[in-house]
Image 1 (cartoon, rainbow, N blue to C red):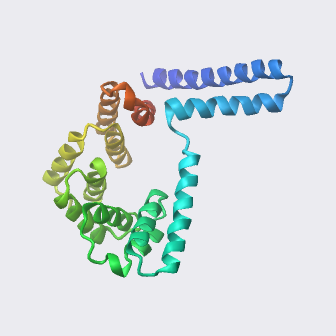
Image 2 (image 1 turned 30 degrees about the vertical axis):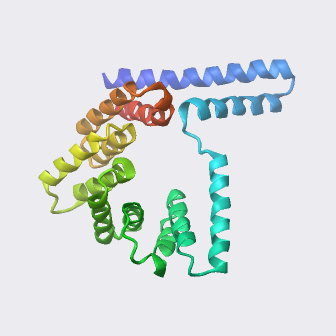
Length: 241
């Protein structure tokens, strides 16, 4: 059965390659220029990704983010006590997954008394990403006490991953975290929870979660399907592997 699934997946990949080649050939015939044809294929796939798949990074968003970073760095240089600029920089660096820089700005002296859920959540995941698990968990738990919906379920993913890897993991805690994650009915969270189990060797549980992610995607309203489509596609791929 597994062999059949793998063959189907490989055939799909070959089908995509054949379609890409045919597209390249047709554009090349039309333009008479192979380089223009290649650029055309890239543009078509980039547009398809932007409006349908959502795998490629949004380069305009990255540009806007970098511009905001420069603006806030300048503001902080002019006034080192500018807490809002420091907070903005911290959050922007979290978006860029540059967690050490994020912590540097989130630890600004003027932000030491910041007890908002969003601040604590971003500080918590940054600390956990650099290996400061205990301190990071403490921040995340505080953020969830203030607002259980902060991060739309992602904080629970961090806590579950940590609990699963702990030598003294608590089964009741794990079940509680799983239930809280599933309440968000979010394809991304279900996929990421599936990956936690897959990486820990529990392939059956992982496949069930990937199936749930795919099912959840099927219930998504058309207006927000693009946001969740990437995670549904990845879940399908992970189910096959």
